[in-house]
Length: 308
Image (cartoon, rainbow, N blue to C red; front, side):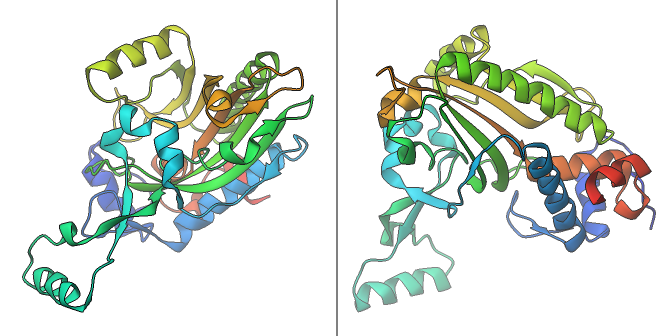
């Protein structure tokens, strides 16, 4: 067993098989839901520690949320209008004993049983920053607010691509304040993110990006988002030589969340928000892709950054 990528360097299936062969991921029966081995988790944790070190003087407030959130948040931000194809709603059983037997019988026969469940008050987090905004309602201080989270995110995108997960972690920072506070902060983190990933030996590039909006209306939303340069991504070749993988993103929401959740600046204006996030699994996979499957053999400069 070797410690470098073999055969076609950009075959996603081969790459996943190699990750599994080295014990870095644990395959499951459902696409995009693999487990993570000890070395994979060590790399994720080391990278998270490095982000903490870089941002230690920023004054971010640390929040921690469960992988589910209030269903009303998803409704309030119009997620079902813009991304219905990605959402995950939590349903549970509310019936009586007879209905429970019917449910179990269907499951044992391999039949559909989802219609026996009803919607609960929670949904799976579709974005790491969403649970934060309702907590910021009211007037923020003159210097604004800065919050950081490490949240599990769900998006219904089953795929053979190992980088396209249905459940994954995002390390995010959320900035709230005036446009003059928020936009330079986003741009600062874009450069900081490029510098950080370059220092880890990754061939990165940044580009204007769009979210995967749904339907015909989504085409117009994406065009507007791109024209206004509201979203940037940092890209690394991981599963394709031509279509690089976004490993972190930088988003300016203007006053969308401020107006939705009643967040104001001291002068009474609706607050603007921005967020930036690292895709933890994608960054780990990018490191394995470019430095090999054994972190003990990675370049000294990369190990110094992550294990110092």
